[in-house]
Amino acid sequence: MSAPEADFEELLRLLLASPRLMASDRKTIQKAQGVYVWWLVNQPSTCLKVGRAFLGARKEGLRRRIRQHFSSNEDLSVLALHLARDKRSPWCVGAGLEDRDARKVFLATKCCVQVLPLPDLTEQQVDVVEHYVEAKLKPRYIGEVGGSGDE
Image 1 (cartoon, rainbow, N blue to C red):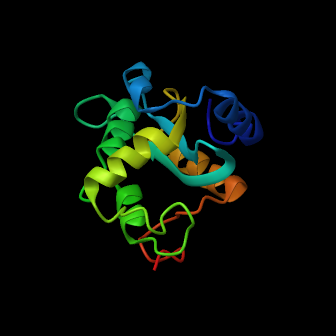
Image 2: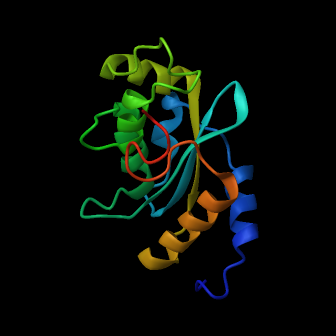
């Protein structure tokens, strides 16, 4: 499937129809490139982040990227940075998310992720899909930390 042929609405529909995975499900995630979306578990309309993963040298793609986010290491996850510095969102206020262990518990118990493997697209096409999904879902955290009202 090439980007001009891609039906972005259909890809978004497939992503949103995919299972919402918790931390305990992360080993079921395919080792493929693709896009993903993070949600608050009890607030299904609260989209936290949209992202994409490429295969990389280890050929682990989505599985590795989601594992990095669940690890909540600020060096590997912009989601971790956003959560650590967000002082406005109700799920962050008083939650102590500046602490990595607290973020790991938060991600494991209060968040879920949906993934859509896109093995037949180029990295550039996966980027285009990611930006389309971001534009449609309007996640709370986009881009660099501080760029979406974290502080």
